[in-house]
Every structure is written in structure tokens, then in C-alpha cells.
Image 1 (tube, helix red, strand yellow):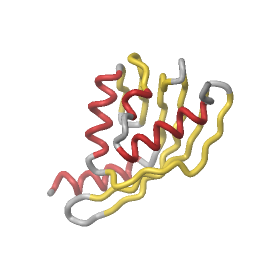
Image 2 (cartoon, rainbow, N blue to C red):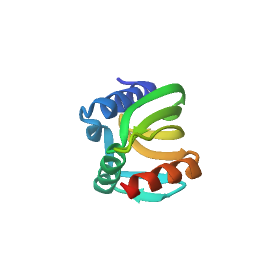
Image 3 (tube, rainbow, N blue to C red):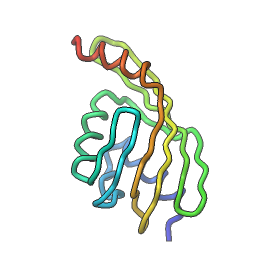
Length: 123
């Protein structure tokens, strides 16, 4: 049986390689962030695929687990066609159900991401 840490690390490894990360989500996954809420696997996959367009790499810097909950500090290295780059540090609180991810609650510097995304929208 996989531990909570195993599931979370497997998800981020699959996310980084486009290797089936969607299979590690429950159908009723919820996602909350400073930019809004998403409910359901289909909507989450669509949102994540859009986000991944600007992501060069992603890594887990640290992870703490307790039972079926995990707190991970992740770094997303992003770039846009103009050559501008961004490293976005994200605090992610993740809940597991049945060895799949049931929810994400994330926190990050919204001003930093918005300024970067504004540059992307100009191109």
C-alpha cells in the first residue's frame, strides 16, 4: 500500500514528465487557490493542462505528511516565448482518498504570477 508521501511524489513525478498524473486524481477532486476554485476531475485536468503550457519543470522541495494529508513546498519553473522566466514557489496542502488525490489547496505570490502572465498575454 502506498503512503500519502508516495502518492504525492508519484503525482509530481508524473506531472513533470506528462506521465499519467491524471490517473492519480479522484473524480470529485477539488482545487482551491488565490485565483479561484475548481471542482471535478475534468475541470481540474483542463485547468492544469493550461497552466502546464508555461511550465518548464516542477519539483518538490519539501514535504510533510500526517495520515492522509500532505503539505508540500513546490517550485514551478516557467518561461514564455519572449524569454522571460519565473520560479514560482507554491505551498500545497493535499488530501488523499483511496490512494488518489482528493483535493489541493495552494498558496503563492499572486502579484508575481499575475505580472508574469501579463507578459505572456502580450505575446
